[in-house]
Image 1 (spheres, helix red, strand yellow):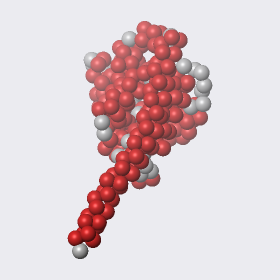
Image 2: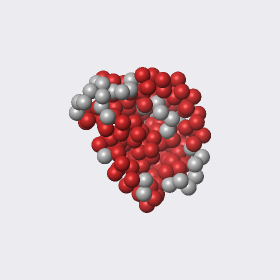
Image 3: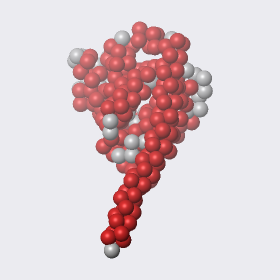
Image 4: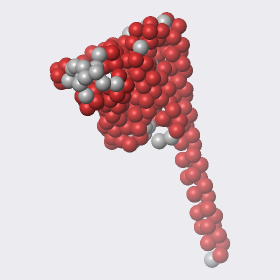
Length: 246
C-alpha cells in the first residue's frame, strides 16, 4: 500500500463524481432537504456518507482477500484495473455504455436490499442515515465496480479496503454538495464539458495504470534475473578458489 495508490483511488472517486450525482444524488438530496426529525441537515448527510464509505471499505477488503488467494501475481490484475478505468471514462462521457451490463448484474443483490432501505425512510436519526448509507453502498454502480477492480489489483485485504475508503472519500464533495444544493449542483456537473473533462482525465489515469503495470512486471523480471546472477557469481568464485587452494 503506497500513497500513490490511495491518491489514485481518491482521484477515481473525485473524477467519477459526475456519475455519483445521478446515482446517489437523489438519495443524498432527500436526506438533506427533508429530514423527518427537523435536525441539522449536515448530520444526516455525514451519516449517509459515512455508512456508504464503510460499505465500500468492507467490499474492498473482501475482494482484496479474494485477489490475494486467486492471483498471487498482481500484474494482470493491474492491467485489468486500467482497462476498467478506461471503460468507465467512456461511460462517463457517454461515448460507450457497455458498463451498464455490470450494473444490471449488481441489481440482483440490490433487489434484495432495497426493501430494507425503504424501511429506513423517512430518516429520523443519524443512526438511520448511517444504516441507509451502508445499504446504499451496495447500489449497482459502474464507477464503484471500476474502483473495486483497482482495489482488487492491490492483492491484500487491508490495502484493498483502504483503497476503497479513499475512493469513497473522493466522491464525498459531490455527494455532500448535492444534498446541500441538489438542483444547482446537478445542473453544473451534468454539463457536457465537465463530464468530458472528467472522462479524459480518467482515461489518462487508466492508461497510466496499464503502463505502470507493464513496466512493473518487466522490472520485476529483470531484477529477479539480476539477483540470480549476482548470487550465483560469488558461489562460482568461491568454488574456483576452493579447488585452487587444494
